[in-house]
Length: 232
Image (cartoon, rainbow, N blue to C red; front, side, top):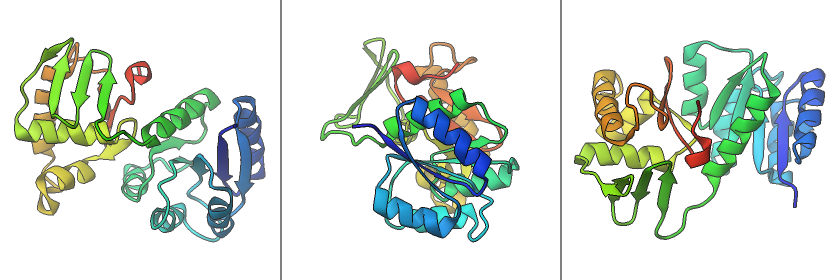
């Protein structure tokens, strides 16, 4: 069956453009012009992925996202003219999987939708994540690079496991710090920078030009979803 996509955007021209691009890429497309209608469509259509604008006429997109996350884990990619760091962080912390700013390239948007859906696929009981030379066995907690086991500290492994479990999704600095070091560590980004550097040195082919742990400037980090999804 074709994958289904729901576009929630109040601009008719954007909905028309996205419908054309998504249908050409093999999706069945539904749309909604405001937040309330969008939430109703999610409940009724159960789409595989959602494209959500933040500037809706009835509800702010972040509020739509928060309400959606109360009962749905459907991947959501934000598509918005808002490009301020704090707005991106707010949307990602509210549960968005990715954030694309307008104007946008349809090729990039379609690629990000594919990544968001790959991340959403459930892992098995003994998940083994592979990205290029890296292999992470989350059941046995064994990490190998090019077939050779590498030693990680407890914090380094916790950080890598967090990335793997959310592969393909942008994780904000605040979210990572809260998950690894606790709620009182959200402002201590220096901790995170140090451990990201150490982790890159152990798992990246070229730590100075990382292909696994990608920096999202001012926002956080994104981990490559799969071996063939590593971004240039």
